[in-house]
Amino acid sequence: MSDSAFSQLHPTLQQTLVSLGYTEPTDIQQQAIPQVLAGNDVMGAAQTGTGKTAAFTLPLIHQLLESGAKGATRVLVVTPTRELAQQVYDKVIEYSQNTSLKCVALYGGANINPQKSQLQKGPEIVVGTPGRLLDHLHIGTLNLSSLDTLVLDEADRMLDMGFISDIKRLMKRMPKERQTLFFSATYPKQVLELAYGLLNQPVRIEVSTSNSTADTVNQLVHPVDKKRKRELLSFLIGSRNLKQVLVFAKTRQTTEALANELKLDGLAAEAIHGEKTQGARNRALEGFKEGKIRVLVATDVAARGLDIPSLDTVFNYELPHAAEDYIHRIGRTGRAGKSGNAISLVSREEEGMLAAIETLIDQRLPQEWLEGFEPDLNAEIEHREKRGGRGGDKRRLKHQLLKKSGGKKR
Image (cartoon, rainbow, N blue to C red; front, side, top):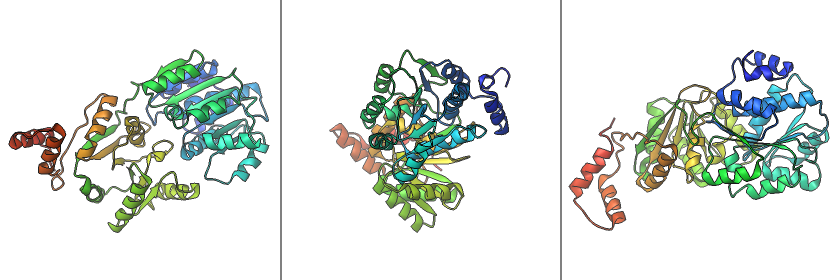
């Protein structure tokens, strides 16, 4: 640890890291910790599962220990989802276990009164989602006038059109002279431009190519007709004896319907989405981690903030509207150097989404047609003819489609 970024941390933190089994920092931690300790604004980009949370929480805890600050909110971490807020909170508690520092997690879907009580104790670190943070600012239970550092975790989501107005409202309630840190796995071009406008001469850290996927994740596409996706999903889970499977769909309605259909197939399944209460989401997630639930069907609310140890397989039942969300989804597996599998079930209607994902990650995803679940070639030919506005040699087009499959069938 003598030559690592960890050696720059407070002795109490170093002892805690040793007890937790942390021996060497990850690449993002090695590069980010010194910059945060130096007080610089930072824009950090690293793949999911590479230790970004520790990269900013550890130096911030160090700064609080060094300054001796007590009884006022000095650090604010803003996250897009309740699950991610809880995950960051858990890590802060873990890393600060041998100190007197206090932390609170503030998010909607939970009773606000216990949060009020915790805020009265003067936590130095606050983690929360934008809506609930604004609620507490409005009723006067949260004060950001003493804030030293603002962190946007999953900054790409925090700066998109859905959250940016709330973020700007939060920023108006904190000192202009502060340290600001942005961390994310992806930075779309428009988000990058906005981020530079909110940061003060930021140090940009990229430990891998921006918008890339981890080498530890084996990615595969199974072309299949839309109406047979559920049947194929059940077949793959059963035939491969997969014990813990995370499945992503686009809408709340689809997650609920798919979970119910999987139950009829004899698979223990539950749905998790933004309109479920926090208690229901927590119960589903705990049941999944404990092995009581075999299949967790989730919307993209679960793509950020779910930390499931040794998750082997992620399915994209439907491809996401935003290509960047594909990276966050498959980042739930292949974490901390372990290998994982990301399997996408892609119908002809999703070819445009697949092309956008491949353009973003700058790689062609391998495709494999599974025997018994091959796409209906006649329907595919009709679809392509209509899209092209003309007929054509159906035999030639069929040959092209079979060639595109790579001849890979199982």
